[in-house]
Image 1: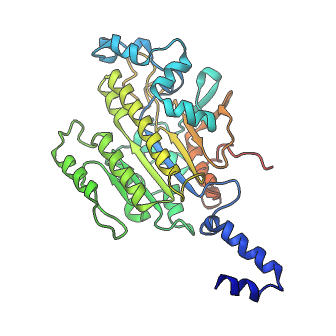
Image 2: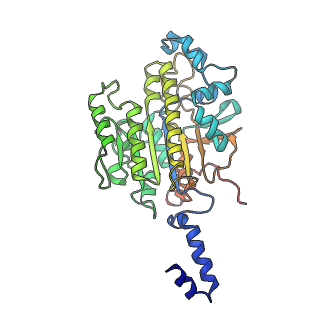
Image 3: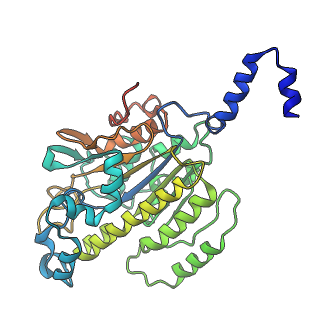
Amino acid sequence: MRDRLLNRHACHPWILIVLLGLVAGGCTATSPSHRAGTADNLIIVTLDGFRWQEVFGGLDSTLNTKQAGGVADPKGLKEEFARDSVEHSRAAILPFFWDVVAKEGQVFGDRSLKNVAHVTNPFRFSYPGYSEMLCGYADPKVDSNDYPPNPNVTVLEWLNHRPGFESKVVAYGAWNRLGPIINSGRSGVPAIAGWDPIRPFHGASLTEREKVLNDLLARTTRLWPDEPPDSIVEGAALDAFIRHKPRVFYVMLGETDEWAHGRRYDLYLESAKRSDEFIKRLWETAQSMPQYAGRTALVITTDHGRGSTPKDWTDHGEKVPGADGWWAAMMGPGVEARGVIGEGEETQRQIAATLAALLGQDYRAAQPRAATALPVRSPTR
């Protein structure tokens, strides 16, 4: 059949060129929203309340005590994370972040380099922070972690209604407020979060792994009433990523914030390291799949900062100095490899437009209130 087709059009060489182009570029042709220099897919992971001080400075020795940090074994924690330099210490906590993401992409928020990244909402806690991050602006009405379903449209909801992204946006999270933050009922974006049993979506049935994880959820002691351990969330998220192959995949991790509130600096750092391991596993899984390999951008960030002293590092909020401190990192198609960004100012509200821009989408055209995207794109060549 192939020979007959080619012979039939032998007098039209331009047809051969078109046909060969379609074969060679078949993957791109299936993504109507793809533009040169942008990603086809996007992975977003947030580490709730993880301070910029550890991201860029590594182990904070002032918190490695029983009194200030609730550390059960200060000597052991020092051996695990203290190094002969800040760069080596931070890489001991977040090896994938520093060995891969920072080298292949860009990192914002290192105040030692005068890069002042901050949230703009005055509340400096989670729901307002996630709303600012995903909507592109701070809404003063969103002033409580118990706020009802978000009246504002997030970039996830907007993308979920864009051509080529319909029913391809999925969110998994530890915190049970994920659904209201992205207004899952209105947006149509599935939000699997909290202690609620993992549920199927888009007509799927539960996998055997999901059934096991639901059994674990039912039998696990609820150390925190509004979120389970990150490990359960990570297992469910990875299973869903492989099975459903979303184009936009958001994972909200929460243990770093919980252990910080509990004044357990040792477990706070351990949770950050486990989060880094999960991100590495998720990224490597993506790179092993044809749909994602070389066609996916990764964004890692947080919802708010924390205090900077042994007294207030456990807390955040509008009355806590330094709780507006924020950071973000990203890599993938369209992100120039510039490493840690130096002197300048970035804000959390820039993330929404950045997420869309990485996918070749103009979020601000639909939402003028949103801040401009971070200037991460590679220069046109």
